[in-house]
Image (cartoon, rainbow, N blue to C red; front, side, top):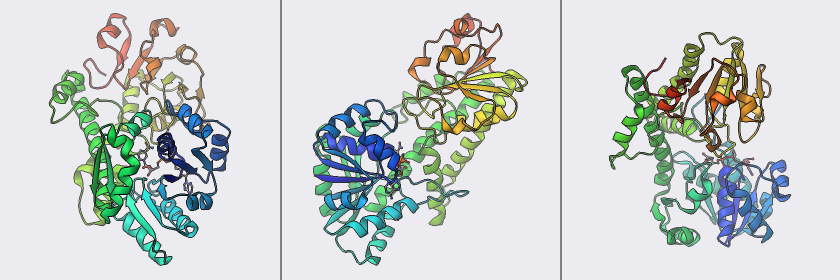
Length: 434
Ligand SMILES: NC(=O)c1ccc[n+]([C@@H]2O[C@H](COP(=O)([O-])OP(=O)(O)OC[C@H]3O[C@@H](n4cnc5c(N)ncnc54)[C@H](O)[C@@H]3O)[C@@H](O)[C@H]2O)c1
């Protein structure tokens, strides 16, 4: 099949590359000329394990093409996926669909023959209907709008795309299910469930799934607060609860406030959709509130650990919102680092994906290109992101100061071992705290 991905970001690039790897011809389109230039010269634009090799292989085979020319790419393709960003509007929880609608208009103007237009971007209930209205306004009849939300996770995107639990396709015209089934057949053959439904249902399934996972994280995070006050280890609670197959153990690990490119914006987007339809989604709203409060809790805890923040050397290990990605969107470090630097701390950070533009203008904040140099003079080390390379660190050997503390936001280290080594150690929802 001939496919076109509009938007070559985390979703468009990964899914486009994987579709090309199944033997389809895929045009990956982006407005960002720098990104397309880099991809065409063999450079990587995102950090995603395993992605670069598959890009190279399919690019060489001329099945995967990168272009800024949307018109040509659309005209050469039968199926067009919209994979552009859907952030929240500034100062509002409403989903900003300007990138989606602008892409839709460009696609309509470019298309001359029959096209299947698929929203892979996460879009609120009723967006497909609005796209259909735009198509009618342009008096085009041969563009069919389908919803096919994407469920991949950054850091595990290739595996998630190749082995999804389910593929959700929403259309009000069942004859298109066959076309999509053919496209996804390689995944269905490996056991993926092909789930067909109405277009609005598909749109809601994506928001509902993300909001539910965010709720699970928030639930265990609040219980972690209770555990800290009642001398209980949250890990026993996670294990005891998660072993119940009705509950499940995933997304039930206490840690920092959830972040990333999806959960924060999608919970807000769902609450706003509820408001639009006159429905109070009170659980989702309190999840958003609780998660926001949690961002402040980390910095309050740091104050308790250090007593005064001014002139203290604080070293962050990892700053991305999770390991195996370079994505900084809504990472908790974006709240913590500026807050600490403003209060006079000397903040340094190391991240396997390198320095971050987000901190470039912050006084008292510096990227250090090695774990040892970053931690050497620290009063406090904050384990922010659980990259594999942080799992077996010998802090007593790395840190030159006699008195230092570790604040482990991911419960990566063993409580007993830290005690045995006589390290002043703080973690999340575990005994002997603050
Ligand atoms: N990132 C994830 O893990 C993930 C997972 C599942 C779903 N989603 C959803 O997928 C969508 C895309 O997310 P992302 O993280 O890939 O976004 P992204 O910001 O990484 O990429 C979007 C890309 O679209 C490009 N773009 C915008 N308008 C364009 C236009 N008119 N023509 C060509 N290119 C255009 C931008 O330049 C950018 O490169 C969002 O709705 C998101 O919620 C994301």
